[in-house]
Amino acid sequence: MKSSNLLPDKKKSQKKGHSNQDVKEMMLQLYDDLFRHDGYGEMKVVMRFIRHNRKEVIIHCGKEYRFVVEYDNDENPKPDA
Image (tube, rainbow, N blue to C red):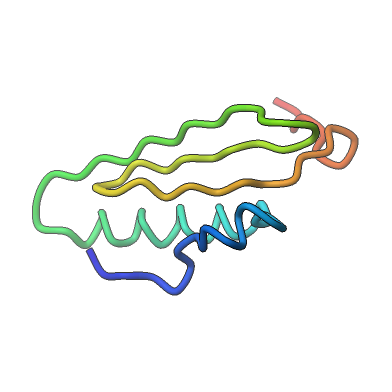
């Protein structure tokens, strides 16, 4: 798979974190890479709470892409089913 300019930066993720949009863009890019790949591919997403109002998002896709995202439950309501 090709490298990305969206790769998480350790210093950035420890200080300010990434936006939810950064994670979505990486997931879409990895999906496109998997779809174009001539063979088997797999992607897995793991989320967990860390500290106050933060989530760690790990995307497994050949490599691990780690993001720390600010999370405010009031700003992120559950979508209607």
